[in-house]
Image: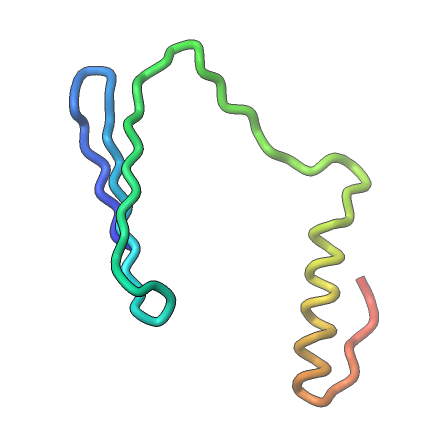
Length: 78
């Protein structure tokens, strides 16, 4: 993927992203996003809450899949 952000004014950016993968796509394609500065916009952290076990479960299942593919038994533990 080729990405090209460009400042187009004091409060604006244009971001072009071109995907060209002949194995997946029949032709390259480009997406363009025009961004305008908004001082009221807020970014909030995306964080896990206590007791969230989803990431650990992903890691555990990934290890088990790789061990199975390699012909070994998955290690126990956490």
